[in-house]
Amino acid sequence: MEQYKQEFIDFMLESNVLKFGDFTLKSGRKSPFFMNAGAYVTGTQLRRLGRYYAQAIHDNYGLDFDVLFGPAYKGIPLSVATAMAISEMYGVDVKYASNRKEVKDHGDVGIMLGSNLKDGDRVVMIEDVTTSGKSIEETYPILTSQAKVEIKGLIVSLNRMEKGKGEKSALAEISELYGFPTAAIVTMADVTEYLYGKENSVITDDIKAAIDAYYAQYGAKA
Image (cartoon, rainbow, N blue to C red; front, top):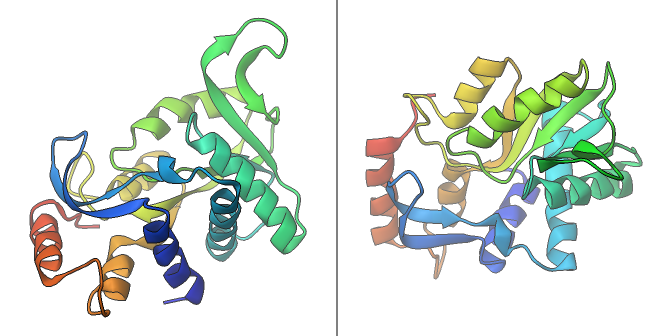
């Protein structure tokens, strides 16, 4: 596993973003782990987060694109922090864009904020985590209605590797439905491989058994 992925896993734990225990998800599933990207609240955290996203985008999609699109609301700071990191790390300027939840009818009018999309723009979409694909389902039509854009891919921080609406993962379902690739900085398999067995690890034998049981029930087939 790449060094930056190991560092990112440690960073999620340090930031209290990734937790282990007993959690009830929006779906009603009982999960032994939970991720809350809303816990990234400081300038230092956002700067580091942007750098991890930037490296993952570089590794998965390259930097030959024009716009980072982050669905409202959590995608807004992600797109801004990552656009800044790409500039700092690679010397490449990409724009950021996001949607509004409501159309603005005065001043800077419309449903978009940030860069105005134009025909031919190559776009990378950025999110925290995707469990059902609902946010993409809501924002993809908005994004593609603004201009004839090319979606280079979707990047998330953590692939939960569990079933979406069917037997495949939400990321695989998105890729199949919309025809663009999806990727994550790390997967839960990466997290478990890196943490389990370490001295004083948050993934104890009991937690590991709960994770295994969770994936036996909800694990995606692809």
